[in-house]
Length: 38
Image 1 (tube, rainbow, N blue to C red):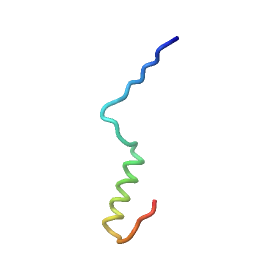
Image 2 (image 1 turned 45 degrees about the horizontal axis):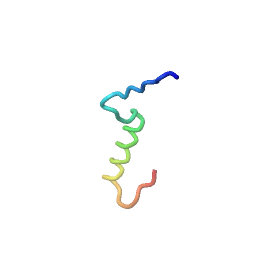
Image 3 (image 1 turned 30 degrees about the vertical axis):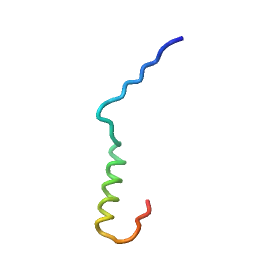
Image 4 (image 1 turned 90 degrees about the horizontal axis):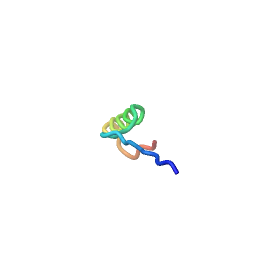
């Protein structure tokens, strides 16, 4: 039986696309009232 090792990088975060999507939603929340559906 072989052992496998998982190495996690620190710090972990979102990919660039997710970071950008979150930024766009935050900007939309500042500009419009009411719910925003994504």
